[in-house]
Length: 580
Image 1 (spheres, rainbow, N blue to C red):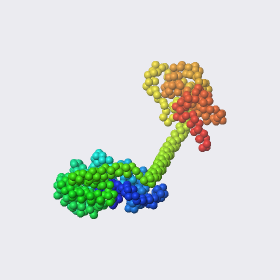
Image 2: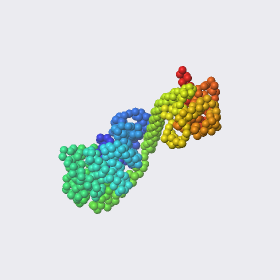
Image 3: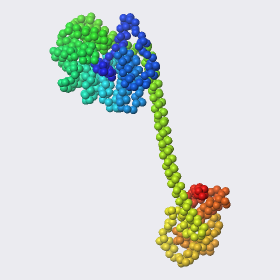
Image 4: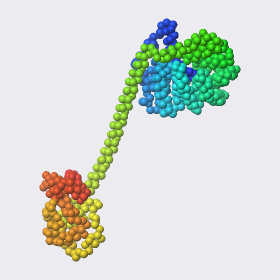
């Protein structure tokens, strides 16, 4: 049976298809059909009005509609709950939405005969149940899928469908037994028992039924006692133990008041008794019970049982040798089965309109949910981007402050070097590196001693040459020529070039080019600060004026010597001036 999540419907023993039988009876008797318009509210109006209802309100409303035999309105309620699945976050709400999806499948299979949609909804609910690890919902979904396969088997007589139904019931049985879900367990066992009536040679079903009987039923409910007796009776029928079968089935029948569907349960027991009588050679007793089954099934629209009863009656009359009745009920069986297939394909026009309107509403809700999720994602990305931008900005500000502080320190040290240079008292170390970590001593003293060990210069001579170099560098504009070289310096000072190189290397820890660039950079700094005279010149122009042919070479030399770029030096100087 389809497994609807409603207390009075939880324990159907078989799939119930009823509305189309009522329709067939009305058509065959020529009775006027009841207008569904009187009990069906506008889908669009109800859908919009019930959107704000809570899960519990919608569930209660759906149950009331089922009581009032208004399945279309119940389907609207379940659909609204089902469509909330993508939006809800809590596990409780996800399970509620998934349960509604399962109930949507139940409504489609039982009232609208749309087995494809029923299967899709059962499968979707089962997927969510697995994701949320909700064993109760999983068991219910498997029961519903089993009922769906069993019903389809009755319609098309496809044995593979019955095998699928048995597999689904086995899953439901294992889960219910392990988690001690007695209600779902009893429903599953009842459904397996009904299938066993049609296929008592199936060892898998027999194994499950025997396993159920091994459970201690002491202290269990009357419903448990009823199912236990029903199963023992079915197994006895299969084993051809007719006395034991009759005893247990009659005992089980005494508990029919405990069943949610007492008439359907009674019909199933009478079917089993009829089969038992037929196997015991009591064809007339089998006929009597089977005719009762057919009467109950027709009265209460148990179409699956009607199909089984027709086929069983054909077998009974065949055993009695009444060929006319055998052919009559055999023809009834095939015609009825064909009518099931046709009834499942033909729907009332109003049902089609209703389902189309409901589908349209569901699509609108899904589109709104998709748009809402897209907007939520865009907002999340935007917020994330702003947070990242803020973090980057903070990092930039911190680094900027740190860099500015470092630049100011380098600028102040450079000012000290400029001051010493202006007083003509600077040393080669101060000239070559005003930075906190001077780039001197690239050539170790031991190497210089080895290099110049054959030199005849005394210390006094070295000091004299050093003073002459300093004096020339500090006062002559010749050093700002791009072509100025060590040879020219030696010629102007009338000093041996080798001696000049030795003094520069030993006393300054550098070479001629480094010494020359030191004086040129110091002069460039002085000109940057002399805004009155050089304020109109560009950085590149000032670099060329002190001997650098390109702005790139000037920038590299300036950064190496001062630790600052020319533009940062100028900016820092301006800030210092503004502070004053």
